[in-house]
Image (cartoon, rainbow, N blue to C red; front, side, top):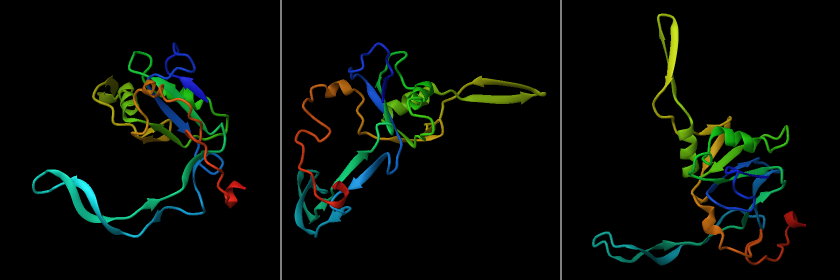
Length: 199
């Protein structure tokens, strides 16, 4: 489920950034650990770790301990109705992120499906913050009045749904247009792992 923040952009156009709405859980979006294991920490061994000499500031290698940290993990989406994307969020007027666009994204989900998280980068979060107004209300002699002033706080929720901020979503997805030939498995599809969860 995909919609564009910029109505002038075609469906296959990638410009600006994206926001994702996901339904987390075993029937939706979740992490799956392979080989019936979690994260495995190997044995520590002596190693030279690249870094700066604390006394001279010169680049070099610092003696230390190192261990391999391995995991077989995948982010799984079990239903096409458990994730949606708002793409082409830009900086031009009418293309920036606001609560109305997030409401349009929520409207893509079927009735009864509860989105558990919005995922966005810091640029989109700042656009959302700027779109919100702070209203201060004062009461003078029984007469209420208010005006929009000040700066809105950094959002942690939108429409009652928590926001997860990540640097893994780039500001300009058109930079990714040169990447071709990648399927959902990456450049080279691996052989199927034989374990109970894949049978």
